[in-house]
Length: 115
Image 1 (cartoon, rainbow, N blue to C red):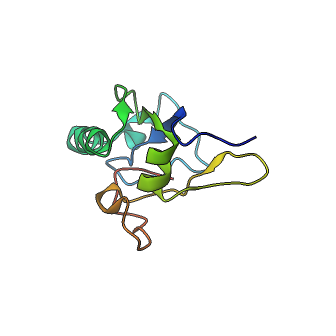
Image 2 (image 1 turned 90 degrees about the vertical axis):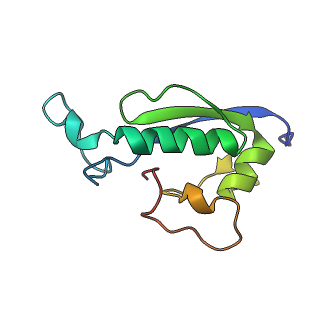
Image 3 (image 1 turned 180 degrees about the horizontal axis):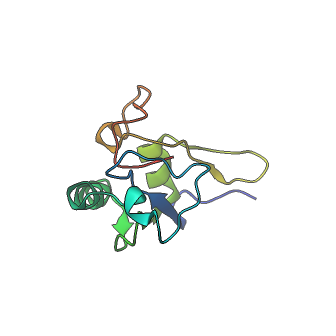
C-alpha cells in the first residue's frame, strides 16, 4: 500500500520542559508534573513556528501539542522517510524546529520539542 503524499495525518509532540528534564524513562505524576511543563514562551513559540511551517496545531495541553498536515509536510519539515514495509513515517526526535527543512542534521537540544 502506498501512502498518498497529500493524505492528512496527525502526530502528538512533546514540548521540551522549562527545567530541561526529559520525559524518557520517567513517570510523570501529580508530584512532579511541574518539572515537565514547558515555559509559556517556548510553548507559544513552538505553536507559532509549527503553524508557519504548514501544520494545523491544537492547543498545548500539559507538555504536548497535536499537529496535523499532509504527509508531504511532515516529510519536508522533519526530513522523515516512509518505511517500505509499513509506509509509516519514521520521525526523528528531538528536532530543532528553527532549522526544520534544512539539509543538515538538526541540533538535538535547541528545539522546543523533546524526544
